Amino acid sequence: MIQLFDFLLFETSRQEKHELLVYWTQSIRETFRQMESAYQIKFDGNSVYALSYYLYQRSTVKWLPEEHAIIQLIKELEKQVSQSYPSSYHYVQRILELSKIKLDIEVTSMDRILLTIYLKKAKWSKEKQLPKAMIAAHGYATASSMANVVNRLLQEDLFESFDMPLDVTPQQIAAEIVDYCENSDVSNGLIILVDMGSLKEIHQFFKKQLSVPLLILNNVTTPLAITVGECLKKNAALEEIAEEAVRQIQPEWRLLYPQENKPKALITTCFTGIGTAAHLSELLEKSLPTTCQLKIIPYEYQRLKDKKNREPLFSIYEIVGIIGTADPAITDIDYLSLEDLISGEKMSVLAEWLDSAMNVSDKETFNQNIIRNFSLEKVLDSVTILDTEKVMEEIDHFMRELEVQLNRRISNPKKLALYVHVSCLIERLIRQMPIETYQGLEKWEQCQKEEVSAIKSAFSVIEEHYSVMIPHSEIAYICDILSESTELLSIEEEF
View: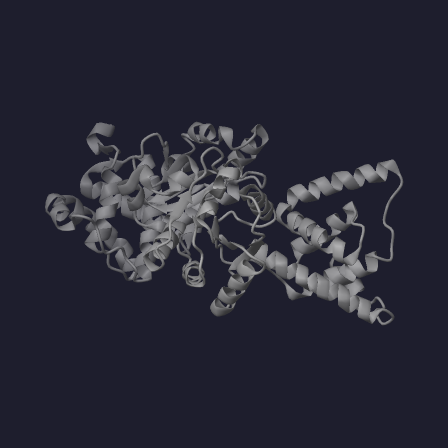
């Protein structure tokens, strides 16, 4: 594929119709700009020239096989390519749709196949994930003028514009917006600024097709658009954007969450912070089949525990379950501990969660990937940059010494939890970034003197090896792992 495009770029003659080739390149560059704005992606600059030269050469060749067997083979190949590289295939489809009218070309399946494979190998990347924003206003150029001013002031293309005739109906506007959503990446939400109060209820005409959060603000003005744009640049949440707009401009606002067709999501969490939860999320995402639409979301344990299902997350998504190092105890939401996932003891629970999100084939693929990706060594390797084998040896020594100090045997599930937690703890201490807060630490220290002393003594081997010191706040979290919903068997009882 690279050789083909290198040949088109460097070996083919382009002197005879230089002006035509320049026109093609300008058209493709404008198409790429539209794509980058719509999908929040960034293409490699070479891709503009590669696609321009390819389509320029293709315009002189009719590429339509007549043999039925070859036609069927091409259809099957296109199906496989679209399934293997869904994002690149979708982008190529949009590029060709936008280009074929201006360039008067007849697009074939082979075009989509070759360009998808090329785009997959080319360098393109997702830019920061922002909600899409648009200004919809009556008048010949009201919305486009306002969007242009705000985009230039903020030095970023944040707003699209919809200029509407005075006699346009809300249904017609809704149809335009739905069409825009189908051809743009609105997975992070959609913000619509409208100029009249009547348009505030426009969501009624496309509510059933809504699968993302929608924020509608009326009485749009340039200052309001600037306020919203500044919030977007700060990566503020939709609720925060609405509240800031009300505070600054005081318009009316409504934030709508999906009612019927919420995207399905699984939460990962850790009581020591977002870091381990994010690592778990990455491992789970690697385990998902490419066709699965399930979203994996890392979330702070304390926020889940305090706010329960009042968190906006539960309004945006249909939560199928929570995986983590501690149970936030949310009503009607099942929990699976990390140690159970590593040990494989409750894979049936995970399978039940995924019944509605995957077909049988995808679940089999997911189960195989989970077994491979969630071995203890793989998990430790993902959550720390330290030598996994050496860390495991040190933690083994720590746990054996802790059992002696407490005169207790630690159950296997809690040993798995300690492997993950202590490996992250060691890295935090080396980076001099320990968790320094623990709710009710002073009172806890008075009640847990024996455990504090035992953990401190057992951890001394790790302190000496890595030249670190463990604070009492970190000891408290280790104590939580040992005491929460677990059994510590006395040595005498075990025998």
